Length: 169
Image (cartoon, one colour):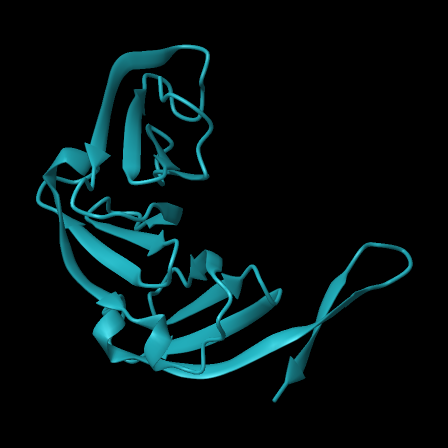
């Protein structure tokens, strides 16, 4: 099993692969039974992006297991491709979205969510507690991303059942 506590994790669409991220390490564990950890496989592999000095803060894996998206501590959102589906040892970096080329603030990106169809991404900045949106004109191709705004004003109704965002800017 993975050493330490993962910063984020993802599970494959079929529930048979568990991915975790700790710094520059990405770990993968096969689950014998989908979505069941108690009888998980003993095989554990890890990918170490040893050429990088910064770690990752979030991971997202496309359902087909070919595309992996990793968010770096200091900003770039990277797209990686696997030559074998769901095999992190076969991944290589394709390209990245340089968040410094947008109206991104000086705060560090913490997490992100990618639309299932690959047409949009929202990145959360930890320092200013704001969300930043991007449209992706060619699905899953971060080189075609364009900034579409931010939201930082959130409120919770007294019943604490709904979260509302107010568009700013």
